[in-house]
Length: 102
Image (cartoon, rainbow, N blue to C red):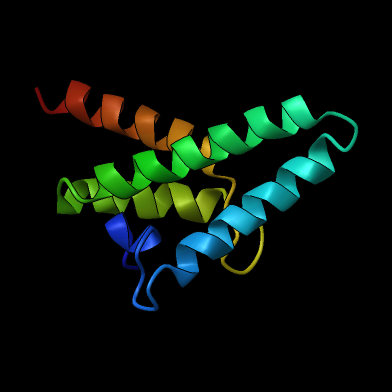
């Protein structure tokens, strides 16, 4: 699974990034149908998660493996991820890895 900056650029010139943005908007609109401010907060958290995973997964093969694990854990359908939870999982994996490999 190619992760990293492919999330933003993709082989199709940003098509994947737009797909993930659209999915995040739909997730947040469904979760908070009556509050645009909560939709925006939710969307910002999802985009922050996606950016974090993209950047950190590029750091090493081990980090990419962790990102893949977390993405599989929080995949909510074909090609749909809950990025805020992927980020939380990934941060926990990174912390544990660093604790075990000082």
